[in-house]
Image (cartoon, rainbow, N blue to C red):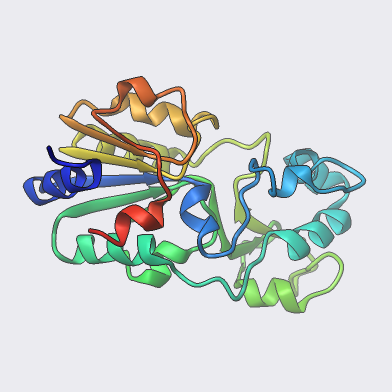
Length: 238
């Protein structure tokens, strides 16, 4: 009888329009902590809970405190793509993988070579002046102190979707379109508990829904193949 990873590999070989939908578990193997894991940001002690610090209203009220936390806990300059990022990029190059949809903000999929990446929650690599719109890279934020400001005196804001903010309409539309047209959907490294992101899975109507996550999710019963192992263990065999 075929084991679960062999089954997964077989479906990849037979599919031509694969979409990967990934969460924090994709990046934890690159040393970036998961917000909601036991070792994640939510279990560390700050004057305010991280979800409050990373909210739109907090950013406007206390931008200096926001940036103190943001520089300390959200920017991982030494993180490198892991085997999952690399294999997904290879699958795209081979024509099998059509798109990567990610809830992560670290840019590691692009660093690994993926081209068609939909970033649901934005990216720490992009920052813009709230006044004039001028672009700033991550290095500019790291090198700045206090509240980073543009030459026009405007406050610079990361292109990251904060709590209380809506997802980008165009990214959402494209996400729904690629999931709807996929012949295989691989969901990996996500508890599927963050909405509206998790709700996009509902748009899939293909034959092979594969769920790879170490812990249980509310979508487990809907998966055609459930693999409760780390992504690295699975993708190193692909």
